[in-house]
Amino acid sequence: MFGWLATHPVALCRRASAPPVQRRCFRMSPLQLTEHLPRLGQVLYVADARPLAALDEPPPGWLVEQCELAPLLHTHWLMAASVVSDDGPCEWLECLDRRGNACARLHLLPDTDYLAWDALLAAAAPTPEAARGRHALRAGDACVTRFRRRHLAGLLALGRAAATPISALGRDIALRIAQAEAVKLQWLAIG
Image (cartoon, rainbow, N blue to C red; front, side, top):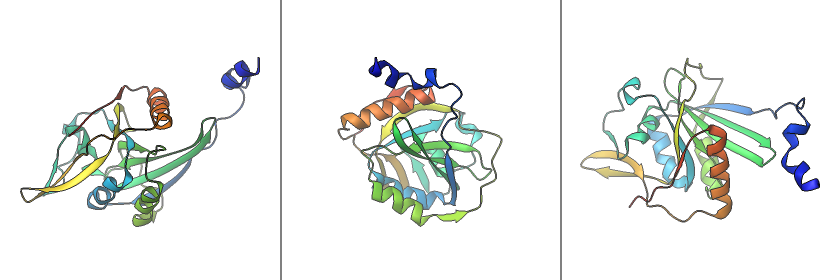
């Protein structure tokens, strides 16, 4: 009986409020962000499903190796969010464009380098809340991703690094996040 109760707490406590999400805002340029992304290891990346035409021009001298990574080059603010849920602590970063519209989300996984995550936030400038745009993230597919940044023909290129095995716990958490976001989770092998 207790096993059933443990798996159905929401059904039993409909009046219980959802845990509060803590949010902090940081100013960060695309150049700074892409410098830190490869150090994170594996994260769950969710890009905005809006057409790329809705984005501004990317910074000069940049390429993306996969078009779904383009929103990262439009990031001007990070909204760091954390909450303690039934599954334990959860952290993610909302990437906001210059108008404050959400353009991507990065979720911390057990396989992520936590010190690199903290270093990314320490490198950003804390600011009062960024002006929130009209558009919340309309989540596209989610993908467990390791980023790479490299020089290519005189340009900086942002892409995905070769896939590495993910832990069973990391896989389970990525699946839960994808279900909560109501998106398909893609498993890519990029070489």
